[in-house]
Image 1: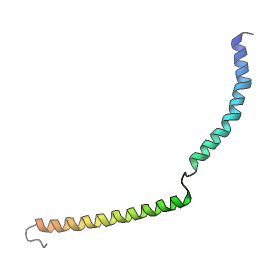
Image 2: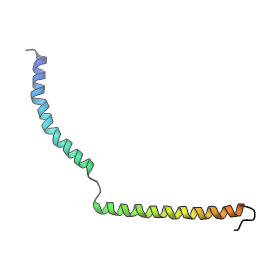
Image 3: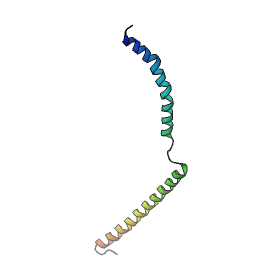
Image 4: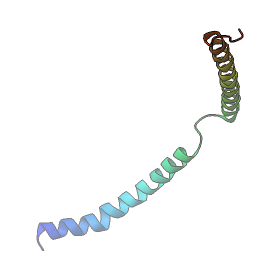
Length: 82
């Protein structure tokens, strides 16, 4: 047998199974870590509360902008009420 054949036999019988044994748990742990949220539940709840408050503020800002735009339109039009 030549060295190349021996190398392939050793690689296929020792290295590949050993790599499979060690890398499978690491891959499972990595997948679990990617699926789980990285923030604690209380922080996530607070973040959701802040998101709802920001959404409410956006609505209020849009409303105020529409009122200001309506007022300016009335000022620009001749005979408009201010």
